[in-house]
Length: 130
Image 1: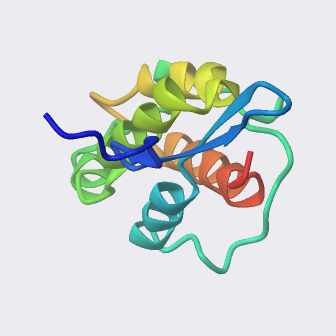
Image 2: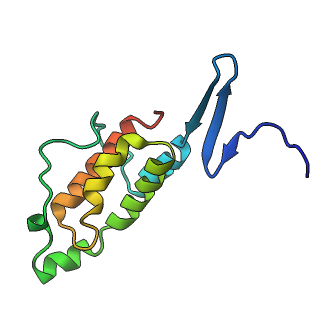
C-alpha cells in the first residue's frame, strides 16, 4: 500500500476539509451540473423550494389513454428520479421529501408528474452549491 495523501474526491463527490474549524464538506456540484445538462435544464428559471404546495400528484393524474402512455414513455422520468436519488442519498437530504413523492409514479406517469420533476431540477439548479 502507498499513502497518497488526504482524499480530495470519491465517487464524484469533492471533499473539502477545514481542520481549524473541524469541519468536513462534501459537494456534488459537478455531478449535478452534468445531470442538469443531460435533461436540458440549463436555461430554466430557478425556484427556491424543492416541492411546491400546488402540486397535487395522484394516480388520477397518471396517463390514461394509449396515446398519452405512448407519449410519456419517451420522457426520461425514471432516469431523472434515479439521478437525483443518488444525489439525495449522498449529499442532498433536502431533496428527500420531493423525491419520495415523485418516485411513487415511476410505473405510470402523467404530464403533471413530469412538470413536478422539472420543478425539482429547477430547484437543484438554484441550490447546486448547497
